[in-house]
Length: 148
Image 1 (cartoon, rainbow, N blue to C red):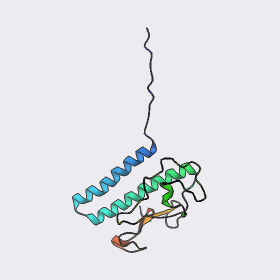
Image 2: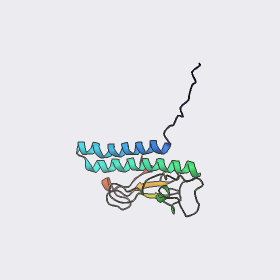
Image 3: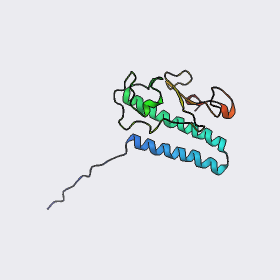
Image 4: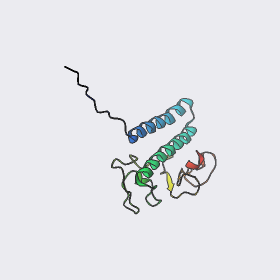
């Protein structure tokens, strides 16, 4: 009796699952390493840069699904909940693109503008830094996708 070859259904990881793992690893690395090195101010800068990269990845996936980035009016909330403001997304992921609206290491929401004026990405994504105000130097400087 010949052996029948049975193929098991192969199941891979979705892009969202891989992105979540990368985000978790990045955030853990950004939080743990600086504590070991006793550099909490630099840890916040590193965490903000990591967050911006992760949010940028979610924005790219949104654009691939929907043909455009969220508008400034829709904001980063469009990555958490399906937008109700035009232009409505064509294929918004039912799982969303982020679990919650992102907060920077200083406790403020990340800023988003589309189209952007400071980066070549088609949008500006940034934190206002430690002082929570535009501009500044050192720890108070804005950290954005134009300074990666």
